[in-house]
Image (cartoon, rainbow, N blue to C red; front, side):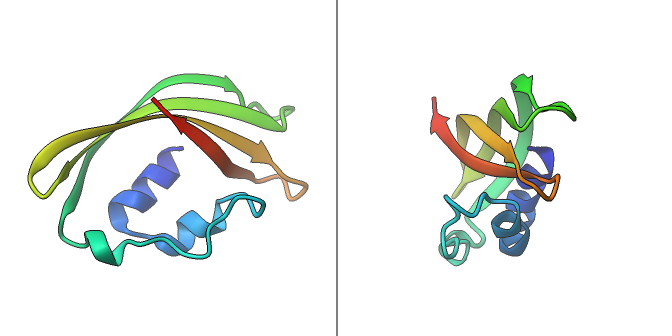
Length: 97
């Protein structure tokens, strides 16, 4: 979760797509339309379920704070992750709070 937050903050579309589950991955992200408008301010992980070495699924609830065109905003989501056969974790999907 933290690495994906950092990738959003840096605008690293390649990393985000590479860590997105192939069943739910979009073709592209639209960072260009937000260029210069979004400033990420912080991430708070609220809750984690599973996600240990023996698990194949995990859940992370978080709140990310950011400014969009100078206005303070927050994104609260409960994200689902899945570990695939390669042993890596991938973002599957999430529910906004």
